[in-house]
Image (cartoon, rainbow, N blue to C red):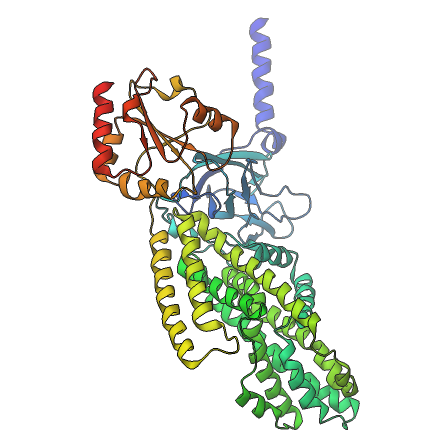
Length: 603
């Protein structure tokens, strides 16, 4: 009887296994392999990189695409959420349309090998160390006759988040060489976007119609900037002399004037889009960012009255001449566009940079053309109704106040450009100081055109300006090429003395602050010496940061009666200070090395 029941059970299982129901609902074969790869071997906090999920599908199977026909289950990639790490939009490959025996119409599917892309962004304050990026690929597999139950494939890939002093290299270039270059993909070549660029990027991600409206409004808003104000007299002079035209004729003439302005902006967007990858690499170069920031700071200085942005007198004279007809109006618009574009560069440079980074060519040209139309709309109205030209507000104290407001905003834009570079440079203070010195040389030596300067004084300040700029370049370059200490420092974070005295090693404690010049001198001159670095391997090297007040570091400082910085104390393996070796202030390696040796002998 027992044998009979077992036999019947086996028969039932065989019948179920041979049924289409089993094939479609209870059993999913091994149809694919998932292999995740990333574009860098390591990553810095505050940067982004690309991730690719490589999927190998067995030849006799296919999976539904991300946008399958109604009723079919889509392929979907999801990343597990992580603190201080965000993932970009998932970019699926283009599917194939294939006809199968079980379908009346071709279906949207993936076959053979596919790659799904995305981007990974690490927050600025993410802790160092290895993090596993994990996720799940959900899919439904089919063969030529049947579809199987939905399935999931989990994946994981590690990324080592490292300090800025460690070199990061591009890897898996063959996988990412075809990484799509579309607006909605938000490509980021490891560069942090400025706040303005992030806002513009969100606009682009909402779709082309929304972006067109937004760029038109932004162009219209450019008319509120002082940079655009100097061209108003040109417009008045040109169209005011043609006020006897009929409104219809005036509208056509004014339209071509506005189109000329828009063409200049479109060329700006086109060049930016074509420059795409090259601009991306340029933005990784600290010196390129420094130059861009200095231009913006110079624009800010002009807003504060260091010098006036004016149209050259020879150009004013040329533009003052009457140019009749559609062609003359178009040429006039092109000329005015050339005048406005560099003048407004400090304001639109964020958009230019974004278009360049995303590498959008046709769309970038279109959007900047739309922005030019927005900029020219008031001129279209004023030129059509020429009598309104004489009602424009004249310059006054309100314009001076507006200029200063834009000056402050431009300083903010310059800082947004600089800060991502600052985070990647070890000597951050030296970098910012160097940029400030360069700008000081430019401002005092060349940009300032206050009345009353004699020719001899201008020559002298120009020579001084060159010397200051050279000093600033040297300072900035030194900071850019500064390296993190090769000593394996332990950052104090409320550890007890017993926790610091491990492995039977003596302890060297460095009490320092970021604003302490001798502290930086110790790092640059003493702790950079190979003999000191080698000797440090016999110690537990501890840094106590006293830059800002913290209860834990304050208590540790008071425990050892620290009264100034830098102060270096030596503890033996029992946690007791070797008081005669205490050092306060800067000490060269010739003085410091014997103390390290004495601490080892006393341990």
